[in-house]
Amino acid sequence: MREVILSIKSISKDFPGVRALKDVSLDIIRGEIHGLVGENGAGKSTLIKILGGAYAATSGEMFRADDTAGSETSHLPYRPKTPLDAQRAGISVVHQEIRLVDSLTVKENIFLGREPLTRAKLIDWRRMRREAQEIINQLGVNIDPDAVVGHLTVAQKQIVEICKVLSTQAKIIIMDEPSASLTAAELVTLYTMIRKLKEDGITIIYISHRLEEIFDLCDRVTVLRDGELIATEEMSAVTRSSLISMMVGRELGMEYPKVKVPHGEVILSVRNLNRGKAIRDINFDLHRGEILGFAGLVGAGRTEVARAIMGIDPGARGDIMLKNKPYTIRNVIEAIKGGLGLVSEDRKKEGLVLGLSVKMNISLARLSSIMRNGLLSEQKERELADYYVKKLNIVTPTIEREAIYLSGGNQQKVVIGKWLNAAPDVLIVDEPTRGIDVGSKQEIYNILTTLAQEGKGIIMISSEMPELLGMCDRIAVMCEGRITGILNANEATQDEIMHLALASARTQEKHESQL
Image (cartoon, rainbow, N blue to C red; front, side):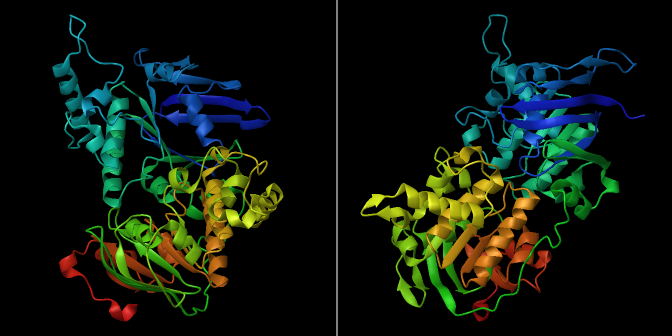
């Protein structure tokens, strides 16, 4: 028999005017990897905050296994009032946003606030280092306990977060989008660690928008929609399409709604684009109506190409033709005036002003569109915001709502609305669907397809190869700051893309004939 380690009974959570969870019941089995999926706003974050002690449930009960009860399984009421209560009960959360102190070492971060002390009540540094190394060894990874966290990669920081929760003797670890910023190689390391934790009897609740991870890792999956429990199923009993259908409440049809669009003239031509060692000898053409993908591992130079073309990073040199006219890289303002737009990779830091309203964010890239007699017109600003909220199906109670309170998918649509208002001829989208649920992803794809049909040129930078293969006409693959090949998407394979993404500069394939 499988032992229930955590039992959730009819949990509901109300906020002013909103019921975030409604009568959710769920049993978590000891030693399983349990997937938790749903669209943004489905209630996943609220549920894990209740489990982690950040929120108190409005109604319902929870029970956890009593590991002190000997061989017989018994359960205790579980009512955490703070994250520390949850931690003491053996339940810890690895949050999507890394919460470490960069100026401290790995061992100091692992035991922050719980430092081992000597009899003289001083920090026992030797013991701290020894115990940190033991936890690191438990995961089978190679990280120096004395390394300064600020010098680590994102993946290494994620490992330190896991070490931190292991140091609390966690029996249940909740992982919220742990792979969001990881490369393919780093993802393999994460998978290995998670499976090792399972072998050690630790229970994992795994939240991810990437359904391939749910199928690769999980034993069972729970689907939430609009705050309600839709189903809990064995992974062997569900398919990708049935899981998506449960998440969105309807059949999505084609996951990648790419429409074949006749290509027009070359709208952007890039030759010999260089910027130090970051990007070297970049050459490509983009046609009207084309979606040109950029693939490659993290650090390959894809984002750097976009930032160089937009004039964000100084020092870029190259010969660029934009709409059949020479384009000199100067600054972002000139790029926008010339007809370029960039939906940046980090929408929260670079795409939005989170404290401003939806209305104000949409107008930011082109304030001249809401000017009247040299002054900002609030009426024009409202009309503009209303137009893009309807056009892009942005879900918000009002255009005065601050962007910080929207879901990830709706935040991304606000960023796209901002750039559409600037009327670009070429739109660069960098990781356009990162951290977005499947329903919102398809809406973003539909927007990009419509823009291509309108004759815009689209550059899509993405780490998800199925997305590039499903949405793009051609795919430029980068490695070590260079384009190592340009493939027709309808003939390309993931293996071909990965081969080019791993190619060194010395084995770079000639692609001038593909431009």
